[in-house]
Length: 621
Image: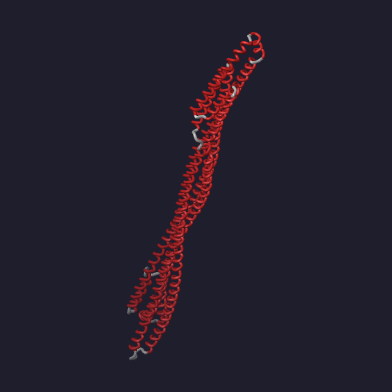
């Protein structure tokens, strides 16, 4: 009976060892997983915090740049408004002065025409006096007429000539002065027009330049605003990931803390139970030792009939042991056939042949061996479950990452190609703009040089014709005075009129050529300036596009290179995980029967061996 108690105690102790090893493996696996999860979460939180800080910093910098661009655009807008206001004021002054010139010139021309038509000295003098008092004439015309009238009055007083004769003799002089005044005012009006053309051209160029600047600022502003929005979205997403990761980390830390407590409690209980089992076994061993000692056996020999007892006891003992040994061997043989266990079948043969004590020890050793194998396989099963689970998760994560990185690389490569094509197209268009401006500049310089020569020739010719006219007019006037009353007077007058008329026509043609060439030069210059301004604006916009796309391509190149680097490292990690899986397969996957089948079979083998021991122990007692 004490041997049964001892065997039961040893069995419970061994079962507790097996259970504790399983629990210990569970604690190790889960602690390792949770500790790794906490470390990974800590690293991820640190990375997300750095990313959030970087995103917010980038967004802040972009916000300052956007404010600067808005301020520059507003400044350019204000400059446009100020330039427009200034030009409108200059335009109003020009239109007012120009109208005054046109009115004055028209008045002088009307007066000159009327003066020429007047044949009466009295009427002429009256007209001049009236014109001198007219408020419509400019100050310069008033001065001329006043000087002429003053000269006329002083001459009359000095020589006592009649008023009509004086105005008749000097009517040509006042006409020439008034015509000269008209010509001078025409020149001043032309100069005023030319200056206004320059002013208007400068204003238009300023407006176009400022418009280009505003467009450029707005383009950059919109680009940076989009980038800022992306940064803010990325920061918000990172904040969400960080909060989720922190919650998961807190949960894992709490689970790990609880697991520490649970495992420590179970370890303490296991140690306490093992001490109790060891004490029980030690007590049973002492009791068995006492019973088997000399005191008990001596008393038996003293008080019991030894001969009969010994003979009958030995006979019964030998027969019983032989019978129990045979029964145990038959039982093990039957169980070996039922379970297809070579261990039990081989052991049944040895049990039938070996001595009784050796048979019990052999069965006990086999039980212990099978229990150790069970413990070892349980540990190996825990190892395989942990490693296979971790490996499967790693392979799944790395495969997903490889696929995502490959798709990302393809997308980035296509984006880089598209940006390169767009940059090339824009660069070609910029080259075309430069070529067109260079060609237009060459044509403009050639036209300007040609027009300058034409104007110089026309001015020179006009001067020469005017000089010739002056000589001829002086000549014919002298001839007319000398031959006054001569019979050849009319002929000479007709000839002089024809020559002078022809020269006047020629002079008019040269003057018209000069005016037309100057007008054409002004128009061509204006069109050239507009073309160059538009081209410069178009070029600036395209160059800004090239700059923006180049920056984007550089960023994309960096992202693509990083993605390729990440793909390489991730692929290496996936390959390593696949290799490790192949190493795990022989012992953890391709091991024949399932772990559950092997556990169930070994459990039945152990129960069979224990049953055989019980058969032997029953007969032994």
